[in-house]
Length: 149
Image (cartoon, rainbow, N blue to C red; front, side, top):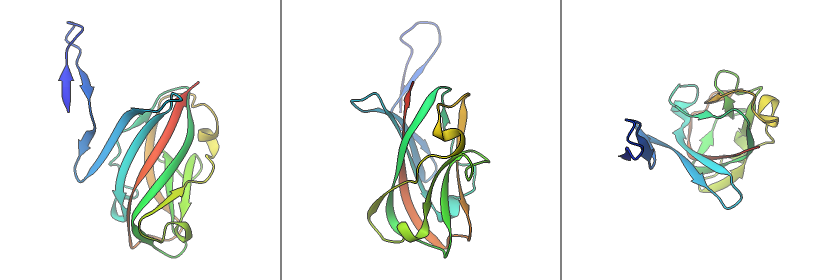
């Protein structure tokens, strides 16, 4: 990651992906329609851990999330939950194990629920958790997209 101090005020601007351990959390990819994309790489052992240091800005509208399954997820009745840290089940997007149990597959997340169904009122920390049963295997990347209203 490179840094720049172009304003001359001692404020640095960071460019490129943010590296954090064995996973990459990257942001700032902007598409043609003004959407921003955040990429979160994880495996089943990270669900529920506080490894994501990503915040969505106030006013952000979550437009979708897609999961690229690298290694099939295993866990009868288990669900991957992406959403507001600590309240992922009520406020966020989910994937059920029946849809993510195959290697090398793209799967769209369910429709955003709770506070994620509308423009976010305040800055929102992103969390990743599991609900239902526990996963015993699985790895992938989530591509979370949002735009400002």
